[in-house]
Image: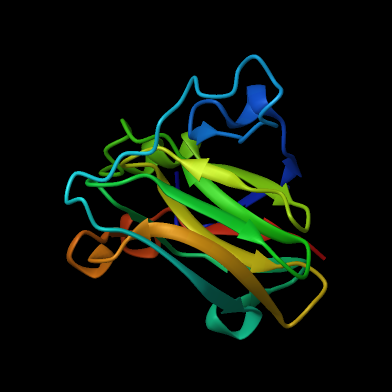
Length: 167
């Protein structure tokens, strides 16, 4: 891979498509309810509201630049856009993100308003960032001490920046 950004078009969210990165909550009447569990190794589960703005990341023709991915080794994370459609970028927890070829496993998904997702422990992620709006408000469940467990990879330094096509 070169320093030329890889262009990714986000796809609609589905349980099967999301499975390498976590799971989608189901209604309590669904027989699959309870198959998965949230994990908080530091026993510091915390609920809050967070937000992201489009101007937090570089704009590129047709979308947004993803040049950093983050992950948390100690906990799962639940995120749900409350007010607008958003985009999230992810890569499986088992990917080392040490070589440009690792970025081939990155995917992008459209999150509709009120669509919750669960990120497995260690899942690389970026966003969610708003589509068609300046900001998104998010319901967030994660470890209270997430800042102490916030690994990141600089995709630009790796020679593998991503352009996420949302416009």
